Length: 382
Image 1 (cartoon, one colour):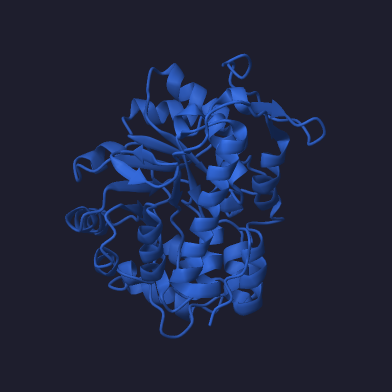
Image 2 (cartoon, rainbow, N blue to C red):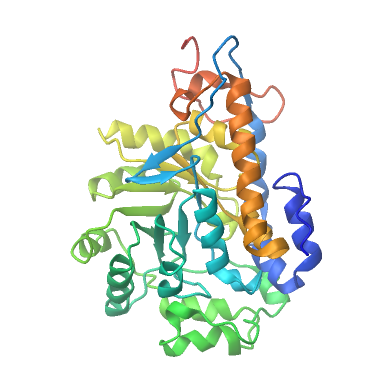
């Protein structure tokens, strides 16, 4: 019987480390080069304080949320993450079922150890397909049309992984897929076996080098529009200039992200760049949603992100750690803990709905290092 007594999303990482093989845990937990950005993703949240308001009616606190017509029990989606089968035999199917039980949207990775059909068969209504773009556009078209036909609600195109970051832990551990696991969306490609058979340390490097399109440009967006009617969300932007281009090319949403610190080391955190990206999007006259990911471990982290202008938050590694510790039940426990923290923190801050969370709640922390500029309306809003 799995021990699900962990009390928060930091403790579940400690428990996962105890039960996971080192190769798998390091694959999930580490980043590129020095892993500076992995740490920055977490520490950036400490640069803000929350200023609560009193004598507000918080007898009922509504954490529900909706984007792109996708309903959620809280302003959180499960982020796209590769190879859940490294954590638990239940793979992405168990994660998706847990998300459904928690009322949270699930984002399914191209580089998954389950198939699109298996995820459809979970019965979860609110599913998003994360797309890596490979050179063979017919394969891309097949993925997209299958996802749409199987009821996925949106596409999330990852644009910050045209080359794979230098992940030394994978090279040191000579990362390979364990026997019995396959990259189900790639299994009909000859390079899918590369991740298992490569002898050069991280077989993922060879897989991505051989398949992912490193010549990808913004012109892909109009092509994709011709393939699907689904909303197109671009994931992996940090620069306000790129956010403006995203608006110009007509995307439906943006995820401000540095890929969990797994790509360019010393890139800024998503939270750090969030206010500038939101300002750039709104400055173009656009109201498209801007989500953020990276380093979220507490309900207060979610509130800080929303107060800085995020339309929603993606939750990554803690989901995988919950899966490793307890399968579907472990993921449900992670999501339940986060939702409870969000609800309580909203009440303590004087907010009875997600819509009441705004920049008026934020103050810069006095000794946590410089924070990026906060939205102009952070003071005096009643």
